[in-house]
Length: 120
Picture 1 (cartoon, rainbow, N blue to C red):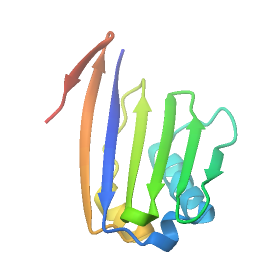
Picture 2 (picture 1 turned 180 degrees about the vertical axis):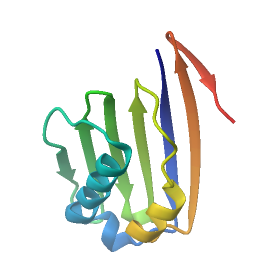
Picture 3 (picture 1 turned 180 degrees about the horizontal axis):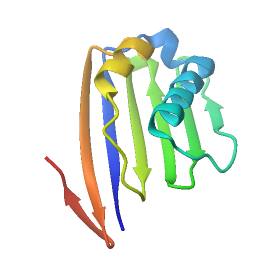
Picture 4 (picture 1 turned 90 degrees about the horizontal axis):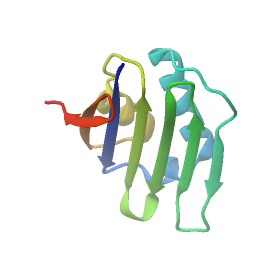
């Protein structure tokens, strides 16, 4: 079985939205809907004291979705791991709209039988 893992870094984000759990929950919900993901429990959120950000984790039947935000650096890191094939999600477009990201860097890794094969 092949799967994919996306490691996403977004820069130039709106610090207010990076500290807003409701905004990040909206992002998770959009990803769940658009990628047909299957949560196995409620997402867990941790809000760090000012000026810190938020860490969120959602366990999926496919694996997991996590986000770590850094309002003090206007950045976020997102990781989506799916053990089953999924289409590409328009990370740059969605993160620009949802958190105001000016720059988005996406790395996709193909997971094959325990090996990591970088995708282009």
